[in-house]
Image (cartoon, rainbow, N blue to C red):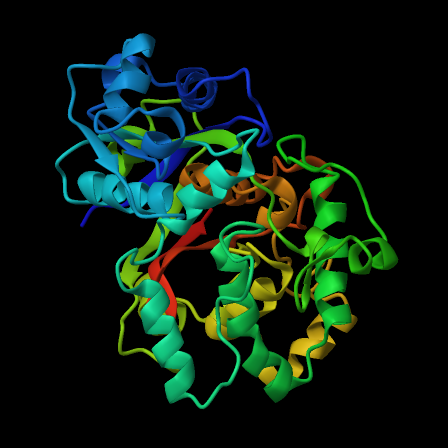
Length: 406
């Protein structure tokens, strides 16, 4: 396998943009990545485009990549449309990396986009609800809870109408972490405060204001232990990357950041204890030739504040019995031991699901290049992204892990 570098990145601000269409969002991110890389459009051998819900939200099905790239003059090449729930663009990145690493292409484009905001929130919640088995998912969760001896249902009243069903899943997933490690709602609020502070330093973030602990705790109940400011907002956005082989890097002006590891996996109906991220993590670190303690900065899939610390535990980065200390002592801050979600994370930067994975990669590439401005981590050499999506049984349906090095 050949060495592969990211040599260009581009990204829109994530937010609510009712007047912007999918072509406009993709145009901004892709042209930004092309300019950053120094390539010409004719140098692109293939394109991998991630999107989850354009069909339901905009009516554009099937040829989403071709439709959004052709107006930019990027056509006549293989265009691969990738859908893998919230992990759509990180899965597209994996396939693009594989295309270059295998020697099939010297240079490829990866893009992810989403139009998820709508004035009718039910339309957005319905789109998100399709990230579960629509035939048997709810029944499976009811039976699963019964097998566990739980009296309360996992999906509670209002799930899918007053809020995304994923909020109910996160509250279910976090309970054992609270019971086993002493994590509290206040710990999660501190994570949210940290991420809002990071988002205030990020011009691409949907929310760019600092908040207090009290504001987070009093921002409105979603489903215990989550409050509104602990949850990722619905929004729109796009992000893009240019990847090329080591032999082609010197032909272009973009600053290379190397892909040290790329892994994608799926959950299992049989998995009742170990999360798919924990299953994938050892092989990901092995592929990169490092251990969990060698990561200098990480973006994790924090659709809710609790999932930030849960993900770090699953990846083997934070020992579970030290989770409270890591939060209380500021280890997750930009200046801390393990800077996490320096972008503001999904709960502040935003979560336009098809663009989320590529947006995480934008942040890590920016950090490793030293281009992150006021949220810059001091001299990072190795960064990681963790991006999950959908629900299969009682676990994430898709998971993509990537490690990058300067």
